[in-house]
Image (cartoon, rainbow, N blue to C red):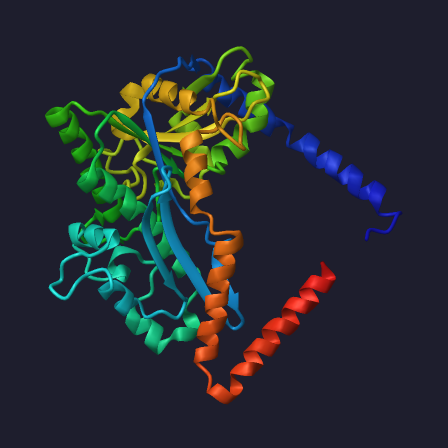
Length: 391
């Protein structure tokens, strides 16, 4: 704790720093004036909405120390399980890569389909964040556990890719993704100037265009972020300037300069001047960023939303569709209901989680000689009893 004599000095130092930085807020208020001029009212429009999400990695891990199992599951807003797997940080990634294909080398999972189309034989070729099998064998101490979450995210992108490029939709649909239409988990081949994420998204765009030409079915994609550096930077200035006044739901495209000043890594955004030799190569972004408020009150939440770069001409229609989907949003108000349904279906909780956790314990027991398995039972019972007494 601070000494009471220190507090007056610390408080005064804070006030002094705020005074010195006052120009920053003035500058931010000036910058948001550009977005204020482009704000448009959202008009309701009806369409089918569809969403899919992967299970939250932090809440769907199965642990029996020192064992750690990550449950991978991708579920859509209709409750359909599109992908499932279980792995550990020590899972051999060469074997995991081989698991995506059959004995003839044909894909047998949605991730295998994506790997084939992007000409990747292993997961480490698809993502630099997936360690190679060789590295896992030779330097296991250097392997971060977080690669299993990268695998989860790859599965989610693979389901989206498979759903659009191979399964398709029978009616006009807005696909709502949990997260922006950007990703830094895909490999960028510096020598070949080959960004795999952009290649995947180009294939998706081409299939969307073909579906409209051949079937007259319109497919849109929107990505909504849980957190946004743009919102974090400009939220106060937007409130002070009344960018989204009360009365109607509204949206506006984020100017490129505002977005650029918000990101530490500039390659996280696609630029309009990509033909300029001095500009950053677009490696990881397929989205154009917008801000939208679906509620009618000034204090209702504002969301950061990506639309496909090729679909910005239809932004008024897409936000009208999204607005209609927020009417029945629960438990989060003014947030797409299809995404909330997918999130609810994806969670593994209560009885299902207990069953899987019991399976972990049983699997650990089976690793031991029969005369030592009772130790696991005793430890499990003891730990459970202590936890119950503490609660």
